Image 1: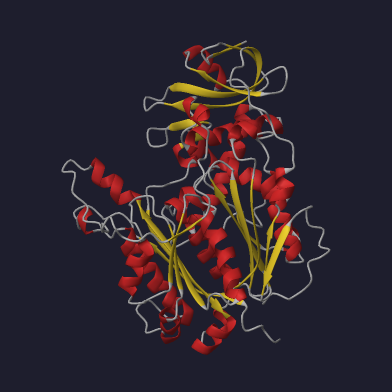
Image 2: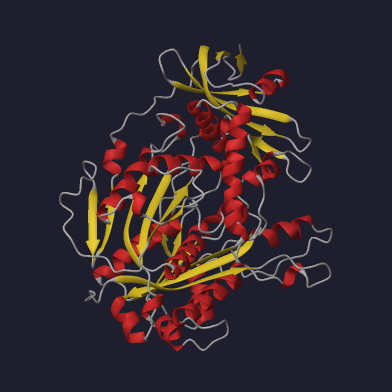
Length: 532
């Protein structure tokens, strides 16, 4: 079939995993910094364009790289560069017209693909490179080392011109939420998990087994992923059992059910027009097309969410992307659901209408952020690279990837295939009311934010006191294995949301041994809550 020359296509992907040294091998100071891993990942993507083995000449990929008009970087969290794209361009020996860096958020790599595909389809870009890397493993190892070695990582001058900023840099929580203890993902995501358990009707023990089995299936995928940080298939019992090496972090999450940030990993992708791919001589069996995408945000602050077991933004963004692709989730063969914690996967699976325990269609192509690795903002680029490889091995099939930022707040969806998109009208696709659609050379993107914003939300009550009902909660544990504190979401008799805290050992013990959701309580003026 004839392809529009401006059609956006992914032609090269690369991943790098820099594992820990064996004892006596090298020093921490010799390990690559994030910039070095980005450079290696881009070189791997260049070679992948030709299907070349590592170290190959890859003339097609190199010719495309030389034409890159934009170098787009997922902002590293383990080291601050003013303009990482400029440093990377210098190392690569290219002169892109634009360098861009994302804000914080696991949604950004997929959202960046959506924006890049539109820019390519509109003729604003011919070739673009997306890259990212983080080295939290090396950074943490240096802090723990008795000699505290200095890492000689690149520092740009203070007067370096900043790049274009991509994405929302809005705070993830309100100050009042942070004051109650909602300051880190590990203190927030258990709110969703405990709400999901209560909504499902499972007991505490039954739900632990449920999420242990879910994460076990993710570990099985990672065991077959050569780029995964942890390549060990684990049983549900191994994942949920508390041991010295797998301590309880925040109920019900043990260490092995949390995102693994302490990795040294990088990934990159090269996107271009079909005409550029053809001119460079990229073999057609390397081409994977972004078909459709969508981006949306849930009611931003936790205090305003209608509940903690759903995500209207995921539901409406996914249904929009699927409608634009003229397909259904049942026809999508490969999925990668953002997996910082089990609750993120459970919510996304429910909103997509897929089961979270179907072994025939895993919910990840990488193994997820616990096992494959959670390199800061850049997991989504690894998911893209793995999805491209999966689709090349199964031509004619479809893949869907999700990205998630902050606290089930920012969402991005992408649908991919090896067959080019078919240009069509999107006037009567049954999209949510008010959905904005943009199309460019066959790629279509949806913004259903108007529909999400019109849905009911909760009203907070910062001055609430007296009788309340526990809605959900998050219990954090100390290194000694004991629960230290809890953040509790409460509903007042009027249905408004209040935040409370628990520090009394007896009440903490109740929340990790009995169902706390739905329990009556008394909220004191000082913000503490007494369970009944």
